Length: 102
Image (cartoon, rainbow, N blue to C red; front, side, top):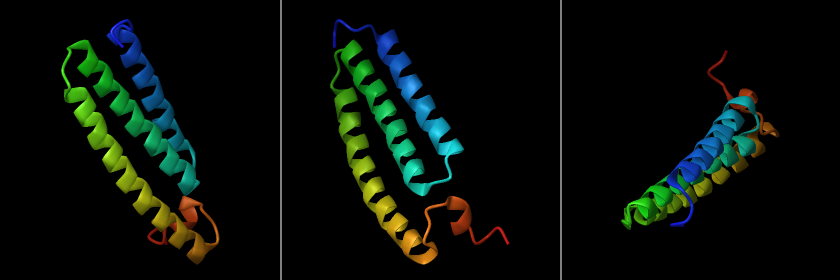
C-alpha cells in the first residue's frame, strides 16, 4: 500500500462512491439500491484504509472494520425488508412499496 499514492486511492474511492450514488438514485429496484449502498460503504472504507496507510496509523483499518460490521448489519436488515416487501407486493419496485404517495 505504501507504493500506491494517496491520490490514486482517493480517486478510486471517489469513483466507487459516485457509482454507488448513481446506482442508488437511478435504480428503482430495492435490491440494486441495497447493493449501491454497499458500494458506497466500501468506497468510504477504502478511503479510510488509504488514509491510514498514508500516515502510518491503524485508525483507517479500525474504521474499516467498523464499516464492515455496519454493512453486515445493514445487509441483514435490508434483506429482511426486501423479503417482506416482495411477499407483500410481489415486486421489488420501490415506487410500488411507497404507500404514502396517495
